Amino acid sequence: MATKEKGAAKGGAKGGAKTGTKGGAAKGGAGQKGGGKAGKQAGQPRQAVDFTKREHAGAGLPVAAPRLKQHYEQTVRAALAAQFGFTNLHEIPTLSKIVINCGVGEAVKQPKLLDVVVEELALISGQKPVRRKAKKSVANFGLREGQEIGASVTMRGARMWEFLDRFVTVACPRIRDFRGLGTKSFDGRGNYTLGIKEQMIFPEINYDMVEQIHGMDITFVTTASKDAHAFALLHQLGMPFRGDDKPVTPKVAQPSAA
Image (cartoon, rainbow, N blue to C red; front, side, top):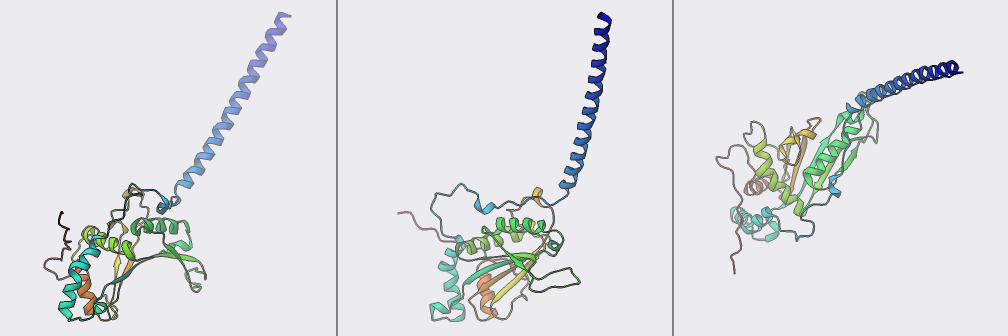
């Protein structure tokens, strides 16, 4: 009886060891397969996050007036009226809106790239961009009508003045080999458009999160009817045009203490 019990114990131990090794190998194989899938997913574009819905430190504080808007009301308006002889206050040109447009041609094959571009435009402008769709189909590019191939954002009011202030004082000096902005990009009706090659000139963009460098078009829409009036307006607002010996630095008169 003792020999039979020993034999049964040995058989059970061998069977358990075999099943354990097989189970371990199976689990290990499953882990390797899962790791392979994870490796493939790592090569895909990262998931975009909507930063416009995130709380910030000054959520409950009163909103201060834009610095550049105060400079326009205190200095630029009187300077333009004296330069061009405007007698009516409504004739003096002002900034109407700023439009940022970004086309993503690779979104036809990789739609997730457009999500990342929308996220970056939201960080730059402070509001949610609008996705743009193709107006017609192009067979050579594999493009279909109604397919999303770009994004744009239109800024007005305080966001417009704040963006122009950050673009002039922070973003433009970060452009590689910057020699000033061209003066031939006016459309004849008082609007100015320029192209940006890299989105990393804006301080809101984190270098570690950038997967692909892309450019964008920025259009400054004014109420001026002539290019000379729009040029003088943007120059007085601090736009660093090419050929200026020293760019204009906007200075706001601080209210005196009571």
